Image 1: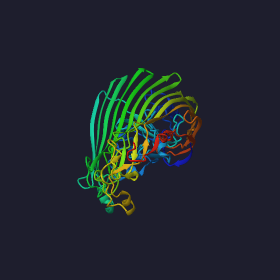
Image 2: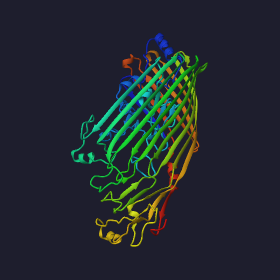
Image 3: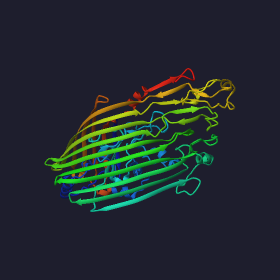
Image 4: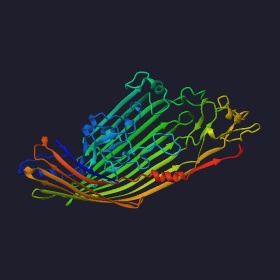
Length: 598
C-alpha cells in the first residue's frame, strides 16, 4: 500500500497545455480540447492533463540514443526515474537486460509496465537473484518481456496523481504504445554493433583501477566483462492497405557474446573434455505484428501479437560440464476495440500473456570431489562437475478491461467529464522441477578403504586415489591409504510441481472537472475511486485518488501551475513467496552409512 501527497510549485508550465485567452477564444479553445474525435488508441482516452508524468514521442524514441534498445534505456532522460547503479557499470557492458528502475522512490518491482494497455510485469520472481547459478532460485527482472523500442510509437511515464483506471502498482506506471501503420508501403532494415576489448582494439573505453586490471582481464564472472561484442539487428514492414485498414510487422534480434575464463587462474591442473575459456551469450528476440480495421465510422478494432523470448547462456565457475540456459520472456496477444457511441467512448481490451522464467540445458546432478587421480582439474579446491537440474517456471495471464468515458458536460465556464470501468483477470503461476536433482560437495565425501571398490554404475563413488599432500595432519590421518572416495551425504531436490492461481476484479470511477476563471486562470480537478479484489489474498482494497491544479492566467510560455494531490495505490501480489514455500517441501537430505549402499 502506498499513500502519496504531493504539493509543488513550478515557474514554467509543466502540465497545462492551453493558453488563457479572451472569453471568446476560451470557448473556442475549450470546445477544441473536449470535443471527441475518432480515437484509435487506449492511451488517448486516459491522457488526463492533471497527471504528473512525461510522454516520449515516436520522434524522441527514434532520435535519442537508446543503448540496448529496451524501454528503460530511454527513460534516463526523465527526472523522476532512478536507475539501478549496476546497470550503469562499465564492467558489464555486454549485458542486454532492461534496467530495474524506481519511479519517484517507489520499489522497482512494484512499477506497472503496460504494452498497448496490457500488463507485461513478471510477478513470478521480479526481485530474482543476482547469482544465476543457484540450485533453486532463478534470476528475475521486473519486466517480463524485453521489448525493443523500435516497435513503439510512444512511452508514457506516470509518477503521481495517477488515474483510477490504473491499478496494481505502488511506484509508477510505464505505458508503451506500439506503432500504427501510416504509410502505403515502407520497409526498413538496420544493424547496430557495439564492442569492447580491454586488451586490444576496442570501441568501448574502460576505466579500471590499475590494481584490479589483472583480475578483470582474467575474470570468471559476468560481473566483470573484459571483452564482448553485441549486435542489434532490426527489420520492419508496414502497409496502410486502405483508409480503413493497415498492418505493421517487425523483427529485432539483440545478441551479445561475452568470453570469460571458466576456471580461476592458477587453480587448474588439467581439464578433461572442457574449455578453459567459454563464451556466455545473451540472446533476445522480438517478433511483432499489428493490424487495425475500421469496421464502422465509429468502431475501430486493433489486434496485435508479440513474441519476445530471451536466452541467456551461463556456466558455473570451476565446474566441469556446467553450461546451461536461462530462458525468459514469452507471448503477448491483444485485442482492442474502441466504440464512439452516443454517450461517449467505450473501450474494450482483451489480453492473453504467457511469460516464462526457466533453466534448460543443465546437467541433472551436481557433484564435488576431492582432488584425486581421476578428479584432477582443480588441484587447490573442490573438483566440481554437473549442474543444478532443469526447472520450468511460468506465468499465464488472461485479462479483460472495459471502460466507458462519457461525453463532456459543458455549463458556462464549467466542464465535466465522467468515466467508469471494470477489470477482471486470471493468473496462473507455477514452479516445476523437471527431474530429481542430487547435490553433494567434497565436504561430504569419505575414503574408500583397502578392499573397497565402487559398485558398477555408482556415479557418486570414484576409485581414483585422493591426493593427501595438501591436507592438514588430521585430514591426512583420515585419508591415508585410501582407495578412492564416495559421497555419504547429499541434498535431493525432488521432481515436482507447485502452482498458484489468482482471480482479480477491479471497479473504478472517476470525475474530471475544469473551471475557467477568465482573467483569474483555470482550475482542474480529478476525483476517483478504485476498488480491487483478489482470491490469492482474499482481500478487498479501496484506493481513493484526488488531485487539483491551479493554472495562472498568463501566456503559455510563462504560465505557472500549483498542484496538490492525495492518492492511494496498492501493489500487485508477487507469487514467489507462495512458490518458495512449496519448493521447500521438495527438498530432502539423503545419507548412506556405507560405500556400497545406494
